[in-house]
Length: 174
Image (cartoon, rainbow, N blue to C red; front, side):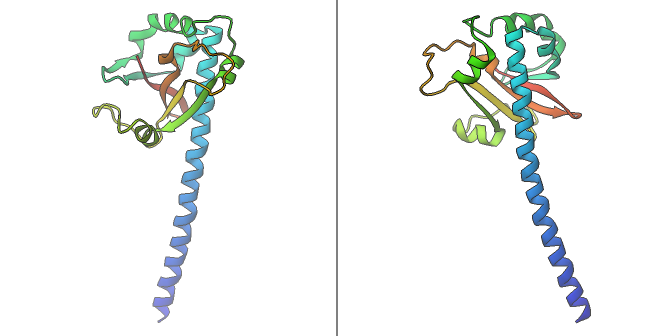
């Protein structure tokens, strides 16, 4: 009986620990989503300052082309980074604050993105983690004063992941 009570006590402690650690995972995922959002908005802000070096440094060493065209090394795109950053906007008079006012910003887990886009997913050869996030900042908000879509959409959709404690762009569209 003594061992039975001890076993029950251990099970209760284990159950309590499992519950509190699962809440911690959810909290960490929420925190990571916020970190991913902050990092992604920093990337977007670098478009406005045309800081090519900051954008290039935000890229992971290997980058997934999310369209399914493969994985490329970061150094392959170095020369094209500045061109892309400079053409992020059709209207150069717009500011980062205009962007925040005009566009919807979402950071989704891969699972949420797959659900939202009816099963469309990343290529099978790319190994994902539960902590990959996709930044979507390419859709105009409903009721936006500016009826013109003034951004180049491809630069406003990308996948981010924390690598060795540092956020990086892990995948790009287009």
